Image: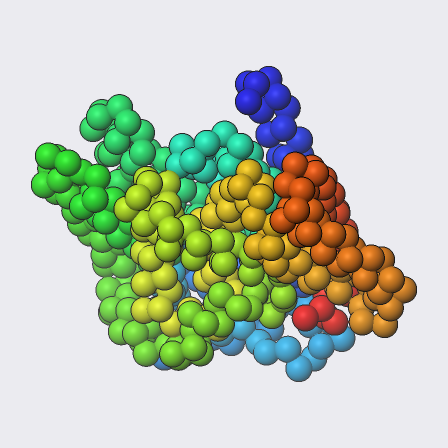
Length: 461
C-alpha cells in the first residue's frame, strides 16, 4: 500500500477513534459505576501532595488508618441517598501507584486539591489521549505480525468497536498497561529482526513499567519469557537472564514502595487479595468469550467475531507462522493471569484481550475476502450487524426491516449458487456483498456508540 495513503488512513482512523471516545466520555459509563477510577486518582493526588497514598479500599480490614466519608463527587449522591459512602484508608496499597500519578496528576494540574475535586471530566481525559496511542500500537503490531492491510484494518476495528470505545474512556489501569503490553511485544519483534539487545532491554523495561500500573500486568513478562523460549535461538539463556533481572528489580521496587509507606499494611493487602471474590469460578473463561462487559454486561458482536477469529488463528497458525504464534502467546499469557486473579466479575479485566483478538479479526476478515469463504464471512459479520441493529431499533422497531432482510438472505442464496455454477460471476457478486455489508455494519457500530447517552446507558444490555 502507498505510504501516503497509509498515513491518510491512519490519521482518519485516529480522528474517528478520538471523536467516538470523546462523545459523552464523562457520562458514559456514568461516574462511580467503576469507583476504581477514583481510587487510583486519589492515591496519585495524595502522593503528589507529599502525603501517604490515600484512597478507598476493597480491603479495609488490612489497614489501621480507616475512616468512612461522604463525598458528593461528580454529584453522584444527588438523587441517590442510598449510595454507599467511601471507606478511605491510608496508606493505600490495593494497586500500584503509576496510573494514579497520571490521572491524579492531570487532575492536580487542572486545579484539583481535594478528593472531591477529582471529577471524571479530568480523570478520563488522559485515557482519551492514551487510547490513540493504543490504536497506533495495534496498527504497528498487526503490521509486523502480518502485513500493512491487517494493521490498518485492525486499527480501524479497534477504533470503532462499541465496547472497546466505551471501555477506553474509563480511567482504570488496564487501559494504561495495554499500551505498554503492545509496545513491549513490538520491541521484542524488533530484537528478533535486528538482533540488537537494546530492543530486548526496552521490552523488559516496559514490562516492568506495566507492573506499576497493575499487578496483573505480570502477563507481559510471561509473554516475553514464552517468546524467548520459542524464538530466542542461541541467546535464550542470556535473554531469560535479562528478563528475570528486570522482573526482580520491578518486584524489589514495589516492595520498597510498600516498606517506605507502611510495611504491615502492604503485606496485609497482599494476603487479603489472595482471598478476593473469584467471579464466575469455573465459568470464567466461557463468560469472558461469550459476553461483554464494561461496568455492566453489554453485548457486542464485534468481540464475539474477534474471539472466534482468534480461535481460528490459534488452531490454524500455532507454530506455523510467527504472527499467529505471538497472538497465541499473548492471549495465553493474559488468560492465565485472568483466571488466576478471578477477574471475570470485572469488565475492565477483559481489556488486555481486546487488541489481540481484534488483530485476529482483521487477519481472518482479510483472508475470507481473498479466499472467498462466503459462508464463514456471513456467519461472522452477522454477529456485529445483529447486535448493533438490535441496539439501535429494538425488537419491535426491527419489524419494518424484515422485508429487506429476507431479500438480502435471498441474495446470499443466489451468490452461493453462482459460486457453485459460475464462479467468476459469483466472486464478483460476493466481493460486492462483502464490501457493502462490512461498510453497513461499520456504520451501525458508529451509530451505536452515539446511541449511548447517559439516559440510554441504563437500559442497554
